[in-house]
Length: 382
Picture 1: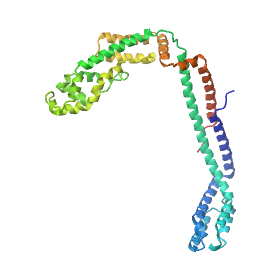
Picture 2 (picture 1 turned 180 degrees about the horizontal axis):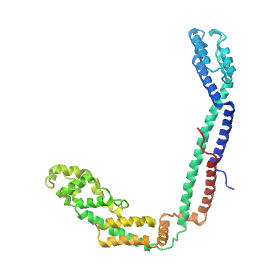
Picture 3 (picture 1 turned 90 degrees about the vertical axis):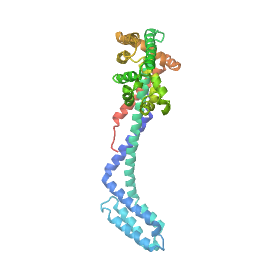
Picture 4 (picture 1 turned 135 degrees about the vertical axis):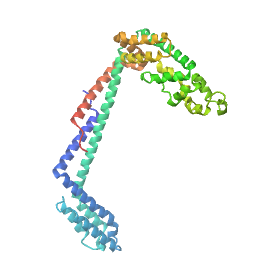
């Protein structure tokens, strides 16, 4: 039998307490309790404020102010307030003598006379506390339900990995991808190293229409400058070299050193990192699922075809065909690749001894309990 989660127990207890306190409040009347609680608060504030002065034999003025403040406060209390006699008793205790006859014990007896009202106020506070505790307990169940759901997803994915044939060769999938990655990296490095910088930036700008390729976006100011400046016909490496020159030295190489520095000097980081941009053109291993890979290789073919030779483009097309011709076969090869890449020795051992299935069964049972508890105990007014 599955053990009841602690979060469920706590929510049930909180719901029971909330129902009990709500019933008690409804029996007495929430508005009546609120009126009594406010009256008590006002009276006790006067007691706390004036006790030291009203019991000081040398402070007649303080005593008079206390009597006036207490009288004004009591006059504002509705005559039909709950436990009205308690307020009358408290007043009688405190207003039957002069300052020389009042003591701290009188104030203590007055507070004792207000105890029935205080219990009503505490009932109202208990109801508020019960609502807050219910909300907290329900949130804890929701949080645990999310955590269990996430763990179930992880274990189900782990089970799926465990079903892969780890002894199967993935060369049919890995070799075309490796061949393409090597070819496109070489082609892009050559393109960036030898092609005029303005053409490199034109390619990057064109690639913005292919979001799955994710090449870096060229700064517009740099593009505008290179489109018209003679230096735009130089390769990127030459631009980064010149950007390090002093203004006086630049005079010998560019027509307008100030404009060059403003456009190129501020983008040195971008230009220097273009050599790493080839990674955006490669295909990861293990590859993405078939449908995702098909969409991406279509975009890769379109972009790579703008700078690489036909042999490199053909390699990209071969990967596209792998993901298109037999989706079931591709999925099996990919599952093997993913399993080899992701499964640890510990996970394999857990799969072999059935520990994953056992944990999954336990968590599914807990998830059902949590879900049922949330359905039974919905959000409440706070």
